[in-house]
Amino acid sequence: MVELLLKILAYPLPFRRALTKRVVKQLSLFSYEVRLSMGAVDRPHYGYCIFQAAKLATSLGYPRISVIEFGCGGGNGLLVAEKHIAEVLKKFPVDIELYGFDMGSGLPCPRDHRDMPHFFRSGLYHMDRHSLEPKLERATLVIGDVGDSCATFFHDYSPAPIGCVFHDLDFYSSTCDALALFNAEAAHFLPRVFMYFDDTIGDDAWLCSEFTGERLAIEEFNRTHDCKKISQNKYLPLRYPSNEWWPHQIYIYHDFCHPRYNDFVATNEQVMLEKMIRLK
Image 1 (cartoon, rainbow, N blue to C red):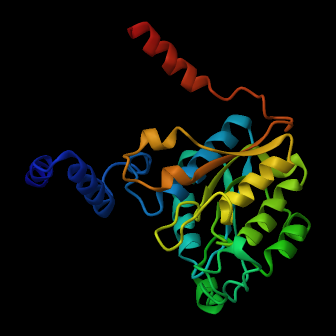
Image 2: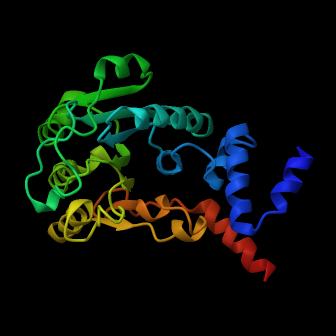
Image 3: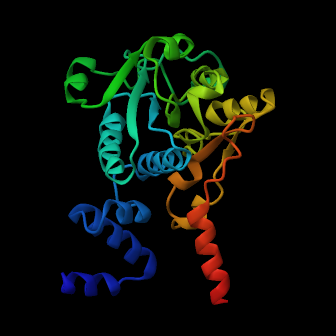
């Protein structure tokens, strides 16, 4: 182990960081919380959102929360989310429900240019439900058109308040349908909900923009809601190395009219700040 660490230290800093993270992840070194802080876990964006949602729920005294994934495809995201939840449950006294929304038959037909048909076509990301469902230990699949399932979700499933949401529906239209879930009463949500949007950066063929896809859906949601806003988490890109993409894809849903929004939750953070001030 010492020889391995010495070899790692011989690399330039960017390679050293990447190699260290890889070793820590493969060998499961240190505690889950430390690995998560390094991004040395599968889908660290899932772990971050689930961890922070459970932390907020604990601070506010919520006994249960829900985690939602929109767009499950083959189901790998749900399986990883279950692993993160198992670790987070060891840290916080909060029960966590997990729901996966999906058509089951792959992407529907794009409605217009806002769904970016130059990059997506119908039928992509088909789910093999019969092979996936037996693998799931915690997740509940919500199969069907997302617009329909969101309209009846709270009535049909009576979920715990939602604490984090992963958006991977690809289309502008489907993302709009999913965001309509937040039109429900405040009791169905934590006052701040941690969100990951998978389709906001893209590549040279995809060419995401603020005029299409998820980014347009977010902009329209903010424009049409006075007290409810979705804002990018500007802190995370500073916390993680610049070669990480996912910190740029974390957003926070704020319900400024939520009856618990103004409840103080930063005791530990303020204690740390006071200590830092005394050391100056």
